[in-house]
Image (tube, rainbow, N blue to C red; front, side, top):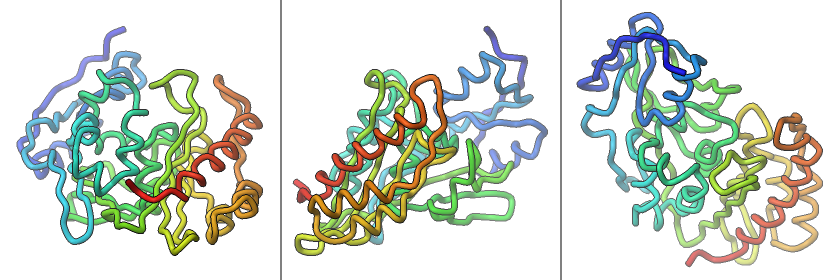
Length: 282
């Protein structure tokens, strides 16, 4: 299939992109790895496509003020190969090889993945698990939205119709940081049936500040706060069993698995990831 006819504009700056978004039925193009298939299948039919690839300054990875800032136009492969991500945002480094396939990671962008907010993808869950935040620029100026407040519903975020996501930020890892990641997919690179991104801080032989973000089981990536509370403390079979018992998930059936199977797999993943959180960073 071919897309419906549309006009094309290459944004010169973020301000120019915001101005162009003022036109009716305009869409932003970053990596295009989700948008282009949607256009070809006519699931999306914008009148104007605004290309962000010519905007300078959105493709950097920097460390400042105890945070790692990742520009919206950073490609997945760039993050996957970044020493700064590996050292200071190890959860994102763990997730990157699970994202689709190399050809898609070569073009797909960090900002595009977060803005799309596909409930079965890895990066929204990582941002949520890390307690990150999103930088947004719109007609009223710049603002920052916490990850806990950013993902609203299925493919729905805190972005307004004329907003541009410019960067995400996550706390830089410390020696006490513990992270874990796992997912079940039918094949490497397929969308996950169930996935879990987790972050915590070691306090001696115990964990504190536990954040568990599941994906593939709800309309958005979702934290399991009761399970987080149950896992806080020493990492032992009792705490892990209590955390699994505290999972409050009601996944829907889909073509990949029944809701009951997904809920079972979520518990299996939690047991695996809990053991990862017990291991010191290397």
